[in-house]
Amino acid sequence: MWRQPLHPIDRGVSKESALIEAMRALATHPAARALADDCAVLDFGGETMVLTHDMMVEGVHWLPGQDMADVAWKLVATNLSDLASKGAEPVGVLLGYTLDNDEDARFIEGLGAALATFGVPLLGGDTVSGNGPRSLGLTALGRATSHPVPDRRGARVGDVLWITGPVGAAMLGFEALRDGTAADSTAFRRPVPRLAEGRALAGMVTAMMDVSDGLLIDAARMADASNVTFAIDSASVAFPPALPATRRDEAMRWGDDYELLFCLPARSVPPIPAVRIGHAVARMATAVTVDGVPPEGRLGYSHD
Amino acid sequence: MWRQPLHPIDRGVSKESALIEAMRALATHPAARALADDCAVLDFGGETMVLTHDMMVEGVHWLPGQDMADVAWKLVATNLSDLASKGAEPVGVLLGYTLDNDEDARFIEGLGAALATFGVPLLGGDTVSGNGPRSLGLTALGRATSHPVPDRRGARVGDVLWITGPVGAAMLGFEALRDGTAADSTAFRRPVPRLAEGRALAGMVTAMMDVSDGLLIDAARMADASNVTFAIDSASVAFPPALPATRRDEAMRWGDDYELLFCLPARSVPPIPAVRIGHAVARMATAVTVDGVPPEGRLGYSHD
Image 1 (tube, rainbow over the protein chains, first blue to last red):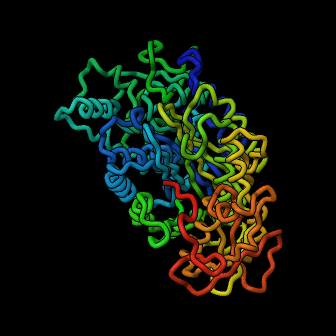
Image 2 (spheres, one colour; image 1 turned 180 degrees about the vertical axis):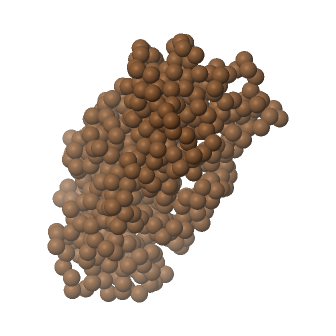
Image 3 (cartoon, rainbow over the protein chains, first blue to last red; image 1 turned 90 degrees about the vertical axis):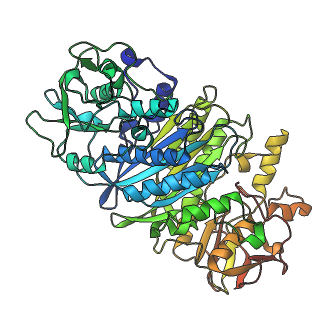
């Protein structure tokens, strides 16, 4: 789903931000959540459906030559991660696929593996042939398990900021894959959406999202949506053991780890393993501080 | 949504057919309807949701240089046409969009026009940047208004075959646009899904689909799904007044008109304007006959 554009002070107005502003004028239905959340949240029948759609483009979201089984897995996992951030139970997916004779079988294998692993059926989709870079789209549907459905907009001053795991493993995995080293690339190739964690947390969080583009940029988005500032203590953030200490700042600006970032009231304790990394303070000029000062430079990925 | 591949005798096994066979093994949930229908049909919250996802690729589904407002309209209209074929009331759409600086404003204008005309909200989506031919995806959600939800598989021997309007207008519109003539290209550029007609028919049809790829090929698909043969009487088929009589056969093999093709029991009369064009007979070697003989050559579009 569209990522909430950052305040210009943090990021500058991008092409995508301008477009999303125009889209927002068309998205006045409450289910759209003003295009400011990870998912649409639609009352349907007597239940609540959670919906997301994400695209991936060859050369932008995956490396040329990468195993299409991994690409298929990631397409499923990233969309399910959006559902996880709402505490939703996956119901099914619809696939938009661009044919590629050589790689179709690998794609199907990875798609099947991901759907089986996460227990989600393929409900439909479409296939096209195209020239040039291929693109993929996936729509994931889920059933909300908790009401109200978690939102990015609910963090309050005094809340504690938590994350379900370390950041930086996907960065190391990407580098291993790109450079062909012996290091483990699984975290980049086969991310695991935190579905069970999302369901366990959904009823108690004040705000929640998945970290797809980088801890700092995604924390800034949740801060903007909630009109608070997150004071992050970098010594509390967890990193993979293989990460050199000199790269911790970089790891906080790299995406693709798909941990859940969430807020709880000060005295609450999460029912699943998680790391306490900061707290919400009254809104300042910047959406996040790290060790008391605004981070300099680019906060993370932007998907332009 | 995926179109049901034709029997090899009619069309030959295409790349897309082979892929859909592999997808089908992953689509065992009943909501997927074995990927043999225009939509997925999902029970959710005590109601029934109808879902479809279609893609469009530059140079394949639209002419280079075509007004992106028209492309946006068509993307919405073709997906809503799938909902119409199930008698569903549209609930919302999710958009997958590839950025294009020059054309974004036109795209948004056409998207807004289509959504307003058909009364459908934008619920979410994703935007990517890409190089080379751009691709678009749309997921449309609807609420079934009639149970059971119409299916392609229900036509019975003796049923009468009907269509909601003429075929060939989109073909003439395409040629006007391609050749820059003064003739009206609206039918190709701005198709109108038969939503009201679909709802009016849903409770009484034995089978229904929308004609997207051509009357003969789509009739053959419904015949295959229902295991009957449709005997079509070409003198009964309606064509636009501007179509030369010599091009009627061609018009029956051209798509993009988005009329609804449906079956009723022999003595039923549709509650909306429609043309009676044939009837279902016991399955023969070919899925359709025209004036008593199997049509030769290509039956219509295939989206490979």
